[in-house]
Image (cartoon, rainbow, N blue to C red; front, side, top):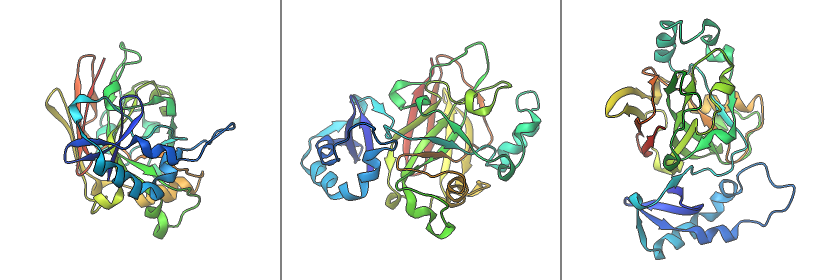
Length: 283
């Protein structure tokens, strides 16, 4: 199942390259009042909504994908968790460029740990990337994004994947400088998710997915998730050993080599096997 959020917070299923509007299913979500939940209630309820989503989709008229504005498929994540230096190729690339990547940022991920990006930095493909400080270098980083589907705390490796609601293409946009990662990667629009949420049943092996990113048609990044230092289940175990993960939380799993500069006017095109294509304008 491929679930998108589009236009003014409508929900759709992507079927055969078209969207079927299933927004009516949101009426089945529980009513909320202050204090509101700090997780994504739609993602939390998703397992019980599958039949209703399919039923609504079967009777809905198809909508052309090109005619809608795709938003982030996750509307209300409690936190965005990110994995630094999680591909050996990126570690080698960063080590060779000391001017851009300070030495203290290049410890093994097991030593560095994870970091958090502000949830306010999240956006969808249609919103584009807005350069926060155009006079400073800003880079693209393609990543597999893992969306948590149920509460996870101190998860065992054997149970890690049962906590996954689905996957998206993620762009971890990065302002270069001396500040901590969390601030340089938390500018508005610097966490792009999309084009939709793909549920785990659509992905045969999350450890064998090709990642490709180009800018203005120029190939920049190419890798496979088999090259991750910490795999998806290992990242879930690692993250949940420090803090509780909630439905709608997103784990950015790290970027491979090929990280490069983006400028206003550029078009970033990112694909991951089975997850679609994310096309984003830079301004």
